[in-house]
Amino acid sequence: MADPGLDVPVPSRYRADNQSSMSFYQVHWYTDPIAVWLGIIIDHRCMEQSLFDIAYMTEIDPTWNNDEITAILYPETFLFGNLYARAACAADCLSANATFPITEFYWCAGCQGSLYPLDGNVQAHIGGVQASSLLIQRMMAKLHRYGITLAGHGRAGFCGLYYEPLVDRSQYKYTMIYPVPQTDKMEDRCCQPMGVTTSIWGAGREIPYWGEDFAYILFRKRNCCKGAF
Image 1 (cartoon, rainbow, N blue to C red):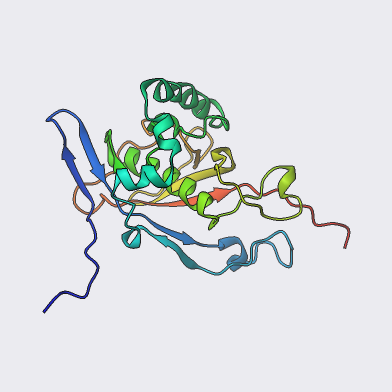
Image 2: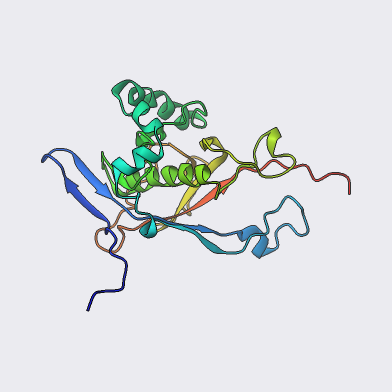
């Protein structure tokens, strides 16, 4: 009898040519309006009133493990898949470590490398923290393109959320909650902008066998105009 379950790729790490280390991860994206749950801000029209939910699971996405199909869906992949575009990401890395990533360099993922292709294949795997930080940014870009995640920062967000097909990574920060939570403030901050090098905060946060999966909380900036009444 045939197995009725989904035959999906499992997370893996491998070497392509005995030199280049590569990896593949699945990603689960949840919506978690913790500020609403805790009642930190009550009856404010600028608060998102969504419930805890699973926004996306890559196991049901046939493009998540296929670079060719992903490149067809996102044709700009061919434009940025060259040495010059990847070299420009060095500036994005420096900017992310100083303040925030460069908005105009939307094809970059800071010190984690190139944002494209928008799938789970990490072409240059350095460590699990680095690879998972890269996939966070790829998933953000993917969900913004689909319209599942909307933007609300800047003057355009005063009147409500809006569609942003090319994600502005500077509106996000993130912090690790598993396997080793970022509970101690490092350099006066316990979370970091997208694209910051993981060598600053990621040491000792990948544990063999049981600590090779990673969970993060993402914080998103929101500009909103409530009005007088």
